[in-house]
Image (spheres, one colour):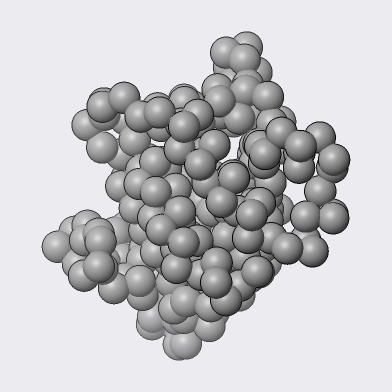
Length: 210
């Protein structure tokens, strides 16, 4: 996997977001404003290992590298207010089974479609494994929600998920921006790709959102 400078990337994003917040800055701890850093201290290898043991899995490399720089994060865009620390990440179904069931019910509006949604895979690879601007965000495999990892709080009807059932040769898990505002999710090949895209979304939104 190509090296990626998370400290530089997050530092730039943090400074630009703080400059865009206006009165929202008053809700932040003084030390955050003074430091210009919306993150936290990096997770130790022991903290990451404990999370992996608790979850029964090995976290994907770009997400592990992020955690080593900042064990959680305070805000990315107006839609996501907090990325979880190693102690807070959890399987999506544990806290949000009702959300999963409501989403499936609203997007599979009859018994036949509901049964199809539970097939594996429910969408063929040639329709599913499409990323970037040509992606159709409605083309998600809803069965993956049951095994997705929740890595953020539920923000403005949105959440960040990692999907361990689609893994690259480098060990990266597919990453989702899953939202009630979409007919599905914006999907990325990795956590790093999702964060890079979210930074671009922030740049586009900052003049009107803060």
